Length: 147
Image 1 (cartoon, helix red, strand yellow):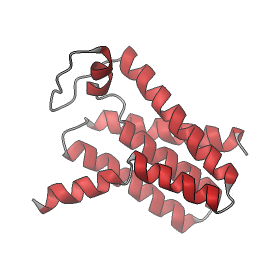
Image 2 (cartoon, rainbow, N blue to C red; image 1 turned 60 degrees about the horizontal axis):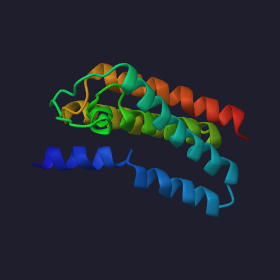
Image 3 (tube, rainbow, N blue to C red; image 1 turned 90 degrees about the vertical axis):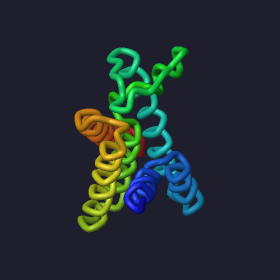
Image 4 (cartoon, helix red, strand yellow; image 1 turned 180 degrees about the vertical axis):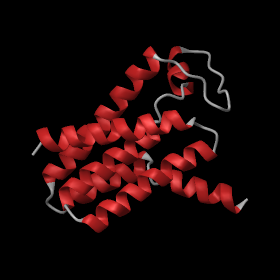
């Protein structure tokens, strides 16, 4: 029981509410460029995920049922959007703060989220690895091109 609760808490770190909270904190702290990078990264992560899930449908380990096109996109396992969001957040914040200790913390958090998704049987290992890699790429791109 405690393991399931812990996994839910870890997974929650990559949820949209946390992401939006970080965007809002950045914006109101005067870090408008960071807020814009994070917002663009979130939008791009969703776009990449939807495109890949349409092109490469992959059933989740726990076989989610679907009756519509939108449900089918949500039922697809590849790539992990939670992992991608966590990696975007980790990459953008790491580049912004340029601190080795914070970078290590963000990396461990993102990897923990990916592991939680596999342990919860929501994704296969390849799904979360792809999500992490794509998230880092998206994070670097938005940090590079939005200043």
